[in-house]
Image (cartoon, rainbow, N blue to C red; front, side, top):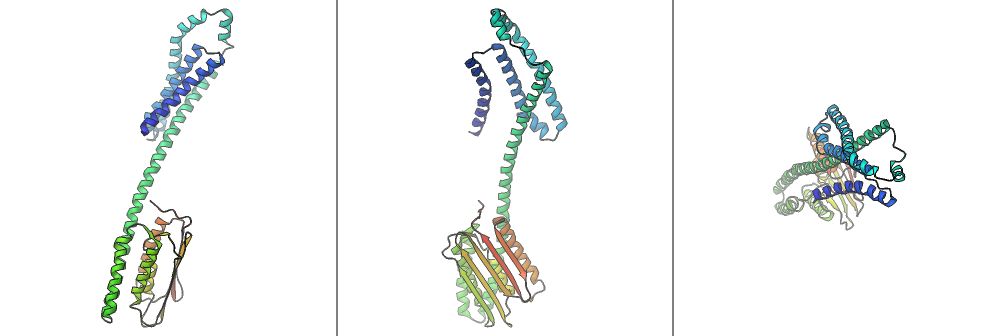
Amino acid sequence: MKNFIKVFSHIFVWTILLIVPMLFMIKEGSFESKPYLTYVVRIAAFAFLFYINYLYLIDKFLFSKKFVLYILINVVLMLLMVVMQSYVTDLLKPPLEEIFDRMPPMERARHRGPGGPPMVMRLIIEYVSMLFVIGLSVTIKTTIRWYRDSITFEKAKSIQLEADLRNLRSQLNPHFLFNTLNNIYSLIAVDQTGAQDAVHRLSNLLRYVMYDNNEKFVPMDKELEFTRNYIDLMKLRLSANVKLDVLIESKGSTDLVASLMFMTLIENAFKHGINNGEDSFIDISILVDPGKGVLCTVENSLFEKENNMEERIGIGISNLQKRLDLLYPDKYEFVAEKRTNSFFTLLRIDFSKQNILP
């Protein structure tokens, strides 16, 4: 269908170029065979230059960066077209001259007209017209190539984005599972009932991680429910000297959000922000303004209990920022800073100008 439309459009344009002048001349009562046939020959020359460039020369030489050869070939072709037009006009001259000679003197004088421009001027106009036709061919061909390349690039970009997202998600999910299993393992020794409840909660979390969030974007209420369950599970291993403040408000939001988007920040807080032997704190706030955006802030006390602690935090944050760049380009604000005795992160996503990728 696309090829048919393309062929039809080309035929339509050339037909218009051939018919309209003839109809105009007939309407004005000034139709003359010789000028019109000369015009047809000229249009045929233009069509030849257009299509030999469009179908062959541009791909073969111009796009291959053989610019000098491309120019030389077109110069030769233009010269040939001028010679061809002169030759064809000479072939048509005898029968036309015979018709001309049969006309009455007054009619002959009217058809002879005042004469055309000088030969040099006619040649300049001819070459400029041919250059315009060749330039039009190059413009159309280049535009089509650019459009096709842009579509190919967008498809390749989409495929690469999907691959990057799958890679980032595969890094996140096993990491979360490993930490949660460690928490349950430590709980078994002190509270078997609590451990059983934790296993039940974990099964719900794993169901979400493995099945319910296979899409890049999930309903906000499901993501927040997962987040609450995760925090409740992590609370089981906190001692009395750890202060945990949680504020999660969605206001009945029906927005979509990237799955596990808040997990890295909360997971880092529980992993690096508490010390059961010392006073510790974790403040978690997730506020959703339906249709507008979400603001998540996490602040926790900081205990450098591992030499590579900052490196591990950095990896998680780096992965989070990659996801944000892929899913929310220019639509998010992210802050992560180490303060005197705490670590603070802020993530704000603007839903009002969200452009969810296909």
